[in-house]
Length: 364
Image 1 (tube, rainbow, N blue to C red):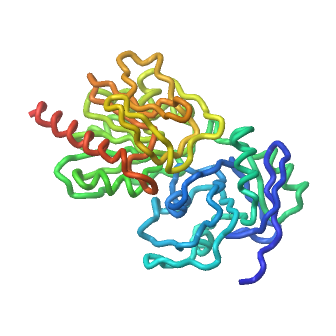
Image 2 (cartoon, rainbow, N blue to C red):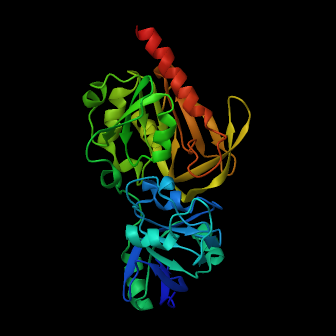
Image 3 (cartoon, helix red, strand yellow):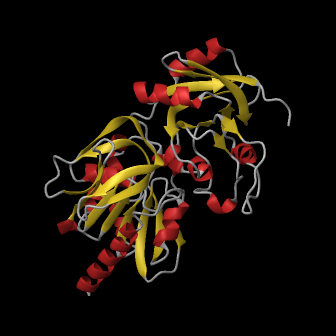
């Protein structure tokens, strides 16, 4: 492989990191977005193809990325929507029986810019101290990158769901229960979990409550997705119209939308939760679950009457789950589908299936 071109990463506060251009980054090319770090030791392909990272540049804290290659089976969406990738070492060689191609080929095919050779330990410490920051990186001169970094936007006030949602409804699975999933950036692993017990009609994020109910679902699923939940008032209003009509289950952005639909609020975390090793306490059982997470915002439930907190993050006390039992509504901030990550919270899908089956029996 030819020598990679010299590149720099510049944060909006002026911090400069040296590295080498990779992916689709060409001489003079520049990429920008909000820099965040992910602590997962594996699952880089699932992270890169997760629509929830739209608008962000992901720095992997694990030093060796790409060592087991990529496979189409691990892609979480139709396209990679993130703004860029930062690594310490982007492996040139890959070795795994499932591998179909090297990671850099995926980056090139998906049009993802990257910078490697970066001191990601220093970068991670900086983001932990100063929070997620807009950034710019590329092979242009540092002065140009500095200007572009200060002009780059974060995720505040940004509606990225409209960019990652499906254009038209489609159906997945052949299970006995009927689920309508509102697609704010839904992951394929989530669909695979739901398909174990349901037939899923996936609808665009802008779908109305009447459109959702026209499918006569047994349950409604609110998906994960990118951006600021406070920038989605129309979607929150739609979900508010659906509460109580069928069992509801939300994950990540779906959790935040359900909270705002019920009168709660959201706030931005300093550097978010991104990784597959976050301890969460189940307040109902007392068990501690190791979870996969990917979110920049968290919910506040003080204004929601009858809300019961079901899960709490043991690192910083963030509300990781709540339910409104009378409305058959529950949501979690973390990712029980574990793509990638541990499977400690997979029972939440079973709970959703049981809630739908019970409600369906009552409606007969």
